[in-house]
Image 1 (cartoon, rainbow, N blue to C red):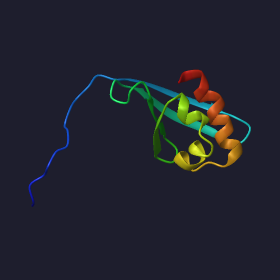
Image 2 (image 1 turned 45 degrees about the horizontal axis):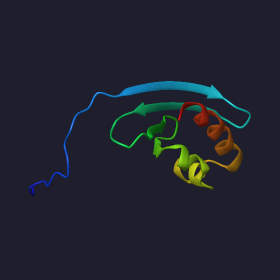
Image 3 (image 1 turned 90 degrees about the vertical axis):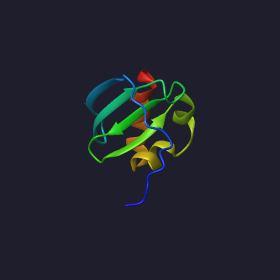
Image 4 (image 1 turned 30 degrees about the vertical axis):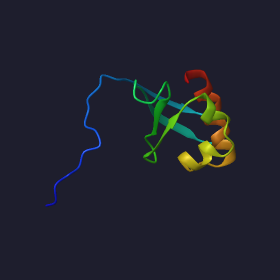
Length: 88
């Protein structure tokens, strides 16, 4: 086995919120992690499909970002955005 070259290997205490909600289009099961690592942005995991993204207020305004990051259709992304605007 070749030697590994670590870019970083750190531990940090984080806060994770688990939330599940239904909207018109779908159900969301999310884990939202707050950490000092991402310059105030949150690490959002969609537990249902295993996709994740680092999200800040600026990302919520970027057209198509949630659709791409979480593999959602436009309506699902809008419903997720409405929720995330309350927690990010």
